[in-house]
Length: 457
Image 1 (spheres, rainbow, N blue to C red):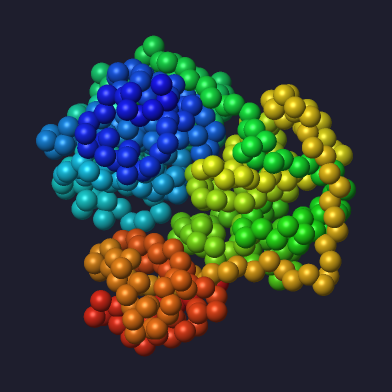
Image 2: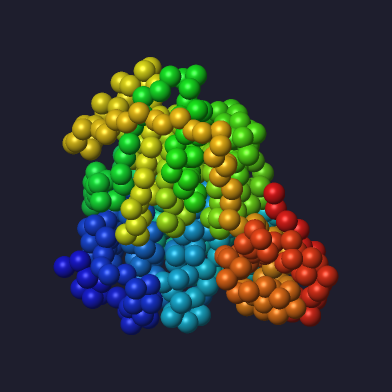
């Protein structure tokens, strides 16, 4: 059965699943959850958007005893963005579990707030290896009561050089624990980690080929010198609301973003040289439709979870079939149809054979249509305003909504996604109303207080 009712879940978790309104279990959930709930170690290979986060989240939440105030579950993620995403999913499923404390502990912010949060021991922690190890070295994170360890996107953590950190963290965790390992690819290094840290692990692989009903793939053979022309022609012809464009190097990301911006497109770049706040704001602006095109490397985009992403474009072909499938798996999610376009030079053509073999079907080759100088560049429909106040100031989404529809006089449909963080908040405003909203918020008050408000970009 692929129905959640077949699982041995607590009433509170059943409420969480029902509130999520899932129609049934995804393949990775159906294959892995019975073993996870039975306490068995699992190594699972699954693409982005497969439901793997919910699979280990339900396992974690089933294993935690909220009446016992100590750390019982730890999830390690390669990036802060993925850790935030995982924490949100856990909290969403746990909304009906009383007194559960979940902490997200990642680098990129000062250590002091994390040390303060840990004065009251949490039940569950989601974090990046570097920050978790830093807290362990300070004696601030007690692991003696840990029941479950999850290594999420293990292949990317190893690619990013976290192997020694993972070894050092795991050395401080009780041997009698459950270990879950999730990875988009099964490299030799991932299997080595599994052999070291897992016992009789159930091997689950649901890397099924993306079907035509999920993602429509088109391949375009182009000369290297005409790749930009081919890309802009596709963007102009189809005019997607948002597009994620992959390049293989940081330099290529910066160069392509600069050239697209010079043409007037609303574009942002995402690569490893950005400061953490810059990365956060780039991802946030793309997610809330304040940016039409995001150009990124694979590492930078790892953990990126944008609902209803219309198009993924491989400006540079992926180096392996696994990476290609992982890239295009970011579109065609949650029942929506996705598009994936791949630009391929003659020198890269040999890489398509592995993709064709994995898909067990012939690739759809097309000729890119040239763009017209008469067509307008892609612009974003929203603008993001940043407020220098957040959860620590007791700000809630409703406070911003009220200030904008009240004194600012904006119609409710002019207000988009609202994100509240510890010390700052962001709100997406339809472009035509952005100046009005900025003036009103800076001149007025939010929840009886004045906050500095600025426009991003």
